[in-house]
Figure 1: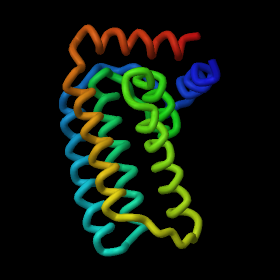
Figure 2: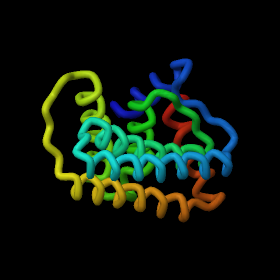
Figure 3: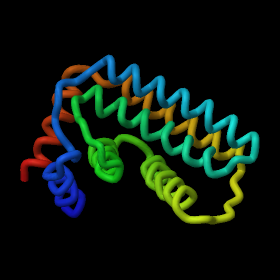
Length: 162
């Protein structure tokens, strides 16, 4: 119930959750942005540039999730709302640790971007974990047919119109 209250709050915000027309063009664009972020993450991680590796890791994940949102016809410019909506829609169909890692990657990005911290990361682990997440999201995308998209849109409507 707490998630649906938050999702309703998100829907009431100007840049929050909105149902729009699904867009294959946006799906492709966000998947490309995700792939570019993975390349950036790898380059920065291998160069020891932790802050940007962590940031690119988060954006690789976020852009892949936003590709899913574009496929089902959801627009949301508030990252926390997108994360909660993703968990609400897919929490029963993907391993819980993926949702937890996604949330944590955002928190890590914010911490490193806004607060001067010395953080050690395992570059191989970061890269592997991010690529596994994105692959899982691409599998979700591949499995979305018109019936599943309609069911997901209805689930969004139920959450935001309460």
